[in-house]
Length: 177
Image 1 (cartoon, rainbow, N blue to C red):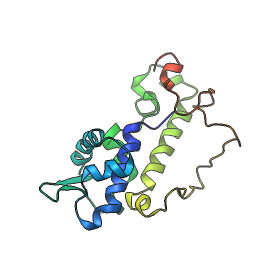
Image 2: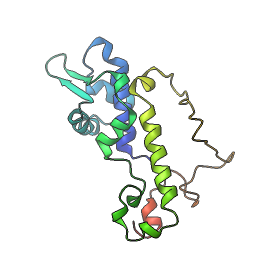
Image 3: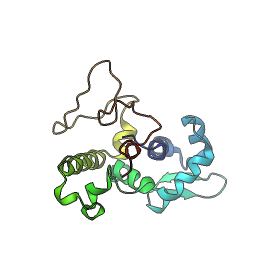
Image 4: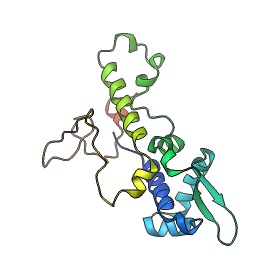
């Protein structure tokens, strides 16, 4: 399971604007240069972020983008949902009617729990948290969500031996949805 490039870049875009907006509207060209990302791709991401009132645009000679609400009110979950839709690791975890096996599925509980923990973690972090955190600093640990990873082994998708960032999607590994 991986976080999409759209989500990663949207978070980077929002954090960059939050960090540099004290001098006024932030031109997208400057964000693209600082982040090493395509200005065209970033401009496509601004559309859903503006529609969700997370960004606002300023026209004119000193135009650019500003954060649309106070940074402390913008959850990372808001950014994720604006550009990628609701968090859903597997369709039946949020819609029991998606699969006719939901009522007798032995694994649905773990999928729902995982989905809920992802949502809870994303909702616990604000844009302000990210913008004020020093570069590379880890997010505060949530004691209710232990994180364990074997030393010197790459992270894998649900233990199926595929490295994170693999071009194959989780659903294709299972032969469908």
